[in-house]
Length: 61
Image (cartoon, rainbow, N blue to C red; front, top):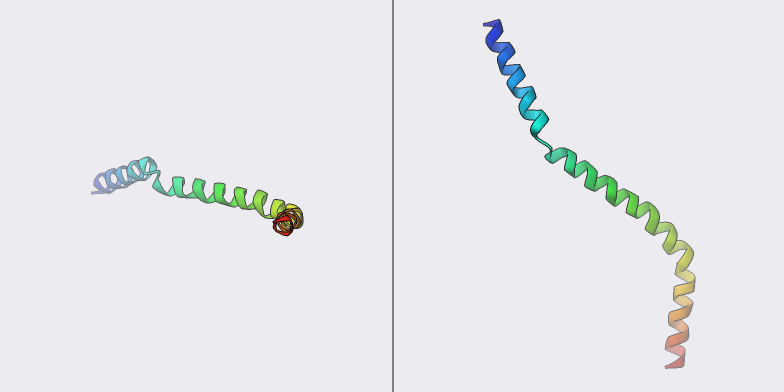
């Protein structure tokens, strides 16, 4: 009986090691977080310059 339980636990562990769906979602989450860390400060820094550029173009039209 103990051998049967041990075999079931080992089988379960092998199945969970092969299942990488959760790891992929974590990787995508980390990529989105990294992109946000780069984009948000860039928009804060470049935002006023872009706003002034578009206002200048609109004023010349």
